Amino acid sequence: MIDLRGKKAVVFGGGTGLLGQALVRTLIEAGVETTGYSSADLDILDLRKVEEVLAQDTPDYIFNAVAYTQVDLAEEEEEQAFTLNATLPPLLAAHAARLGVPFIHYSTDFVFKGASNIPYQENEKPNASSVYGVSKAAGEKGLQEFGYAKTLIIRISWLFGPDKTNFVDKILTLAKEREKLTVVSDQTGSPSYAPDIAKNTLELLRRERYGIYHLSNSGSASWFDLADAAVKIAELQCDVIPISTNEYPTKAVRPAYSVLDLSAFREATGITPRHWLDALREYVNGRPD
Image 1 (cartoon, rainbow, N blue to C red):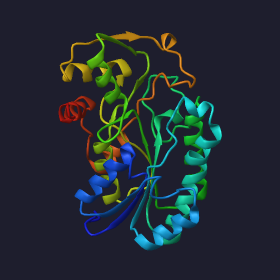
Image 2 (cartoon, one colour):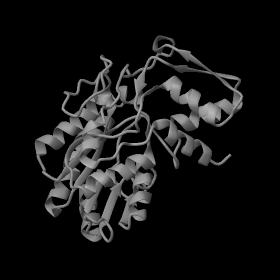
Image 3 (cartoon, rainbow, N blue to C red):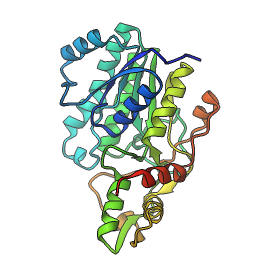
Image 4 (cartoon, rainbow, N blue to C red):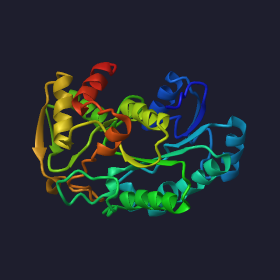
């Protein structure tokens, strides 16, 4: 395995992003000299500036944690979504190819329609229903067509964790203010704790694994399951009530079932990600009151 200590990394989206910040912190803990860039530090669409930054930082790894993630707003802002999610990734990969260093890109379970109840494997064809999902799938396709051998595409899902507002954070905030909450119970996925995603990404890099991998925490849950568990762990006096998707309409169509199969990651690393409930307990109990 590769020893990452003493290596250098650049994380685009590492200044303010939920996953990006977790990556920066985890890389530094692993002894990697890491620079995280936010939109305030760098216009990621200014490729000349990106080239200057990479020439200055001389990274051994380039991470792309930049994405347009406003799922419903993407239905109206299609151009912006495709610019960040589809057009940008291959352009960044081209920079990595010129430097001869690995390029790590993050995608989503939303590339799948979610019409079955069988966990998705990496080789299954994307068939997204939302602009967000289609744009992320287009980013994957662009990277595959570019064909840089040291490209690692990691699909993640239902991300929560410290440093930035997320679903769990919103639920706990509302649960302090209300006696009851209604949460959709007929959409099932794979909750992902950002620090765990970051740590397990490094496990793939240590083993020089490229291609597409699915990463999340073990187990599956509905949004109701995740919300109800968070409220109970926090010991808040709020009833969480399950409702159907039809009772909570949104502009973008969400997958009904988008659980990710983690077999390829387990086979590549010998590691089974911890259960989402264990990760959730760590997150909820570690949040400031």
